[in-house]
Image (tube, rainbow, N blue to C red; front, side, top):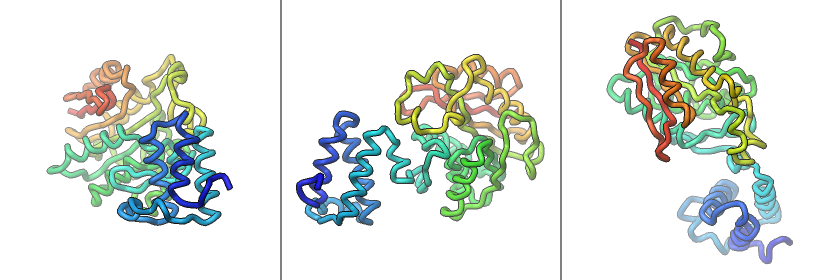
Length: 291
């Protein structure tokens, strides 16, 4: 046996010993806690008193498999198959990007802006796992909601998430760079457009962690160095058509390209443009209003 005993405490020691070169102690504790709660169906209070609980052989093998996959830089969210996003459990796998905290901040911005006015119709371009669209639909259940992506795999994942959460969205296979119409969505009909599109220039790859580069879909991450703002140019044009007067588009952006992204919307006549920093103090979000 790879641990001295079959107790949870032994697994905790095993994880700390083997994963310390790659992760902080708090990261190891957090990941293992989530894995234990999910595998053994324990409550948070039960977890506090579980160190002496005995594990079956299959449980031991399960935790060893998780450890080996973490050592191989596989993202923890892919290993356990889900993550929490804006209070929702979102299924995660290699078909789409893992939802990030800054994307939650983008959703929170939209929700706060519409606490009194609500949202009647919105589109989420490049929906990926569907996390943004599903979070908004959970907050504005009467809204007519559209979610598009150019990846069939990502759309299938988003549909699975919508079904498990019991939320109704209109999913469409659609290239955000095209000028094709959105079926069922007329000009001047949306209160809100939102997108977390690909925006990382390929020359930034060297700055990225191995667990991102090796496992998450590059199609959803990268753009050509020579045309890093290509998606924002396309989204601005579509917003000018699809948004009603006074409607807003919200986008996640590259931290070093905030002003350049803002200029795209200014040139198309958008007003009340706001660059917003994330909790790390970086320009990561933009809102622009159709006059």
